[in-house]
Image (cartoon, rainbow, N blue to C red):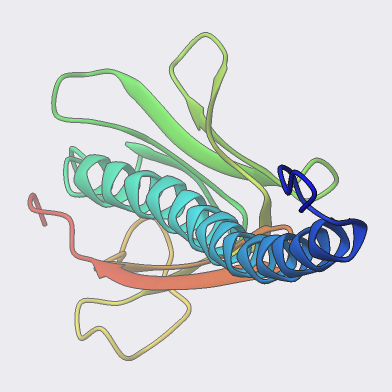
Amino acid sequence: MKNTRGFTLIEIVITIVLVSILSGIAALIILQGMTAYTGEQSRSDVHYQARIAMERMAREIRLIRSQGADITSLLPADLRFTDINGSTVGFNWVAASKTLNRWNGAGNDVLATGVTAFTFTYYLQDGVTTPATAANLGCVEIVMTAQQGAETFELRSRVFPRNF
């Protein structure tokens, strides 16, 4: 009888084919998981950045000192005013760079990037009648659409300044 140590060529080939099939299946499962993770991460980034920008604008718009001279700009993509501390504050959207900025009195700070659409709408005290002027402003509606890659997210908020 011969010494029968080792594997035959057929056994090795079958083992390699089976391991290849299992590796391919495992790679597909991992790829699907990574695709789902990156998609969710992209949606999360868009949502987080847009939400933080919206909350900051709403918080600061509530602090407009008074109607009239304290509001220096009421444009669809630009709002500037004096807050209760006497600081000049404003927000503007630059469509070309898709950037939402906050005016700090000396320059612009970036609030959010990837903002594909943005508008301020100004209402009277009743919250229905538009357009309002600086002298009779009662409510500011903010509509913002942010996009990152294929993910788009829209936020809408109405803000009533506290001091009038």
